[in-house]
Amino acid sequence: MKEFAKYVGVLVMLIGAAVLVIPFFMGLTNNTNLLIGLILVIEGFLGYIFVNNMKKGGKTSNIIWAIILLIVPYFIFSYFKKAAYTEKEIAAYN
Image (cartoon, rainbow, N blue to C red; front, side):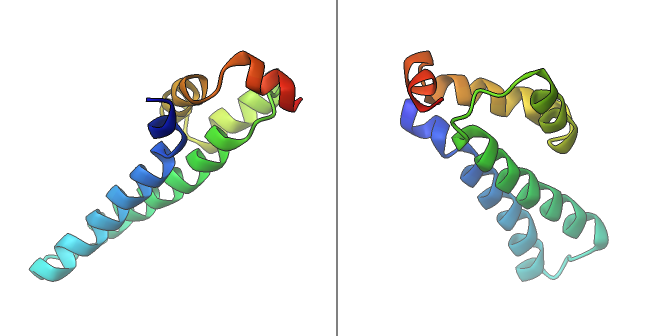
């Protein structure tokens, strides 16, 4: 689980890419598919950065990340960050 948690952002990006590619090959491309795929790719990219950022961060930085990651994905990525690294690993980095 620990290794998977580090790459959950990449998984979200791949899902976003699939949302972009599958309708293209089926000939059903519309703006909704493009928007959903774009949001998933960007969220996955930012989530990967958030999960693999070893700095613990304070209240202000967590609020900024929550705004950037659109609140709900913040809590999901925060869970995976806690699953990916122990408190000792984070403390050793800080």
